[in-house]
Image (cartoon, rainbow, N blue to C red; front, side, top):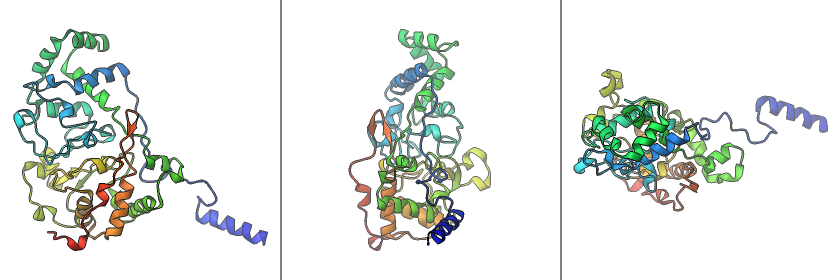
Length: 339
């Protein structure tokens, strides 16, 4: 009997390499967040700049205006963001949390680094509407800022160094230590059975084809409307709806966008580049229809959302995971009228 059991164990080990071992999740498509190496002095300087309204033309808004670190998960909770003099932007503001893990910045990926990204809001007409000579001049009049830049950067206070300092601070806006990360690191009790089921469904339905890696997204471009004509049902509101086509001019990039991170998804409604989906349930239903070509039953949808609640980690010593679960309270599919 013992021999047969021993043989069976060998067979199981050959068929399933994880058999008889501790939980092994190192090969999962989603991976834990790890911190990046940063320069502490530049981070401190960049943090002050992130909250400084002098970056805007009329000195009324800062980076934090659209990227609230205390509420809305590093975004602003609006369909479209607003800049100086109440000018309305063309897209929904993505979260700044974990932006350092993205392979490109902006919905159309027109910036490849965080430093390049800073240019967009500072000089954009509907955002800060400023110019770098203006910003440098205003900050140079501040003895503290001028001395800090001269001490930290060999070239002193310049536009490039301002952008670098802000980017260095943004590299610290990571949210490690989520319950799901603890699960990936071997703590099986960190998430519930329903949340584990949600993760399995997230993989089996194919969501993970675009949402994977440390940021659960943010590492590839994808056309919006792979399995259905999204823009026939949701016509583009403005030129931003063309997506990456605006950057490359290539036909194949029409309606192609950077896949967003889902790390803070439970906190960053509304969703998509146009802010058209008000809830996670609505966003997932749209994705299942136009990206996967299928419907997801409400029970499965609820489990997937439960999984998404395990993804927010911690920032500044406190958990970002909300205590409520309001995204789980959604209208059943049978009561909806969809395009």
